[in-house]
Image (tube, rainbow, N blue to C red):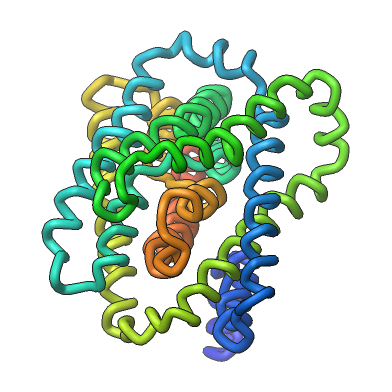
Length: 338
């Protein structure tokens, strides 16, 4: 007989653990215990610039233009994912920011709207679509296109919807985006024919740069917040409220994309791609963008909703992917002859 202890242990063992989240929490703890100040802060800022440039260089080197153009033939699917990412999400973000204004710190309110303006993820969107036995080529196209367009669309949306937080879309902001994001991304696309295969053979390098750049940015951002004393504005109920809002936004978008896919009579494989690509937001791209678009001392609180949303989407979508896959397997069993 299985003991309650063993049952509980098995249950805990099955909970998906995001090791990257553990590193993020450790990085935040390090920033709280030993924040970068003085010369350290200057070095941290320089490290952020280099990390962001390296990140978007690898994005450019890894994203194949051919896969994007091939996937565009399914224009209804691509249009629905685009509408979810850059129309539905921003509208929800505007509504949420108005609803919570005055109840949460202004930088957190800004972060909630900023979260809704970001592009979709690439890796997790494709991974969950594959687990759920969905349309992987379409997911690759949607996620890649979302990231490529997000390099330009997200800063434009931020400048229009959050002018007070960013000081408007100044020439300096445009220059920073061009030098730290667009230029490395284009450079990656240019050299892609020569290094793409090498990068595929060395996935550890891209993983280290991908995640390491985010950790560097998080450390610098939370250090600046500690030095400025902004974390005194947050409380445990406030963190719980942000997590609850993140889950509500995620649930609303998943419901909307699911209903829209079925209303348009998409096959189940396309529905899966739409749901997983249209409901994600990229922390790997969002945190570096935040360091360019917002004042340094405010970045820590601004990216907090994104960090919580990131973990929420991993848990929720991992559960959904397994349910989609199980339903597909059960349908296949029903078709077997008796």
